[in-house]
Image 1 (cartoon, rainbow, N blue to C red):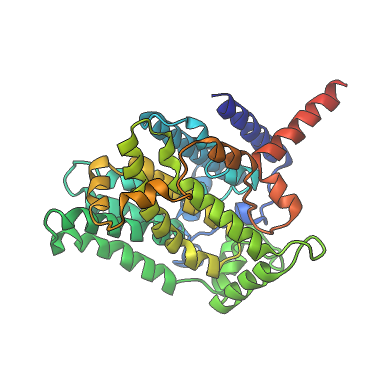
Image 2 (spheres, rainbow, N blue to C red; image 1 turned 45 degrees about the vertical axis):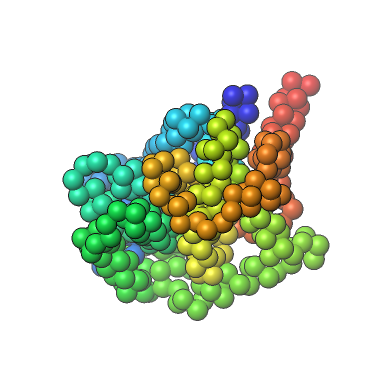
Length: 395
């Protein structure tokens, strides 16, 4: 609980600093949430349209409405993971780690749609496994709503839901009736891909918020970008050396990928029961690989690599916490890998110290990979800098 307390202090401190500094309306943080339907139906416009209608109807402050939504989303996100870890009897400090809540906070991306997207993912997963009638249909309807907020939810949700449905029903009865509701999110995703936006849409959205400077690049103007342009930016950022040529970002991102994967497949080390450890090692190996595959298109289409890592780690851990254990049993029945692979392979640890060390030193920058951004995304560096500020204040 000491680690969790320190994480919460750092998170609250960072959020307070961000609120005091504020966010520009032209920033990607705010402008992404302002995308609406005032220029016609367009991808990512649902949340912005709801905010637009609310602010015009009730004279709410647009800025504080956006901030309030992001604060509430982060609070719900942390609560769901915190409660999930407690229910699994696993140390809840992981909820505040750089794999979860600290990641968007340290990179100032908590004021974006990412945290809300993960909240949607968890709610969809929980709804998917309720005993209520037509729970699969309701989960897919909620997925469709989330896709209208941001299409990335389709990438991180649809593959794992499909896999879980197939894995579970292969042991029971696999019928078309189990899958008909999956047509709804597929149709929604294809629709938002078609209505991706253009320059006229961008201008109408900016005018609706009285944002007159069209020269500043922000999330709204990105609606007019071509697919080729987005891919080119992603590759240009990935291959550029930083720190005067000392840092090669792709290599560092690869090391971070290996570290995140290592943590994910070893989360079960916190279980006391040895059979449960083995079972969830098998499950997490499968889930971590599926979710990594799911976010690969995002790495190609966008250069916000830290955000895609956040999606990968959050959704994988959410599956670890919220997929029912009987479904986990169904899944591991199809794994034709000997138990010795999970008990004797060095990538699967038998003690927790290596995980604690990684949680402390691991950093995941939101965008540009360099020494400063990496350090600012680590728990240990944040703690040292804040302690230094406290000492300097009293000395």
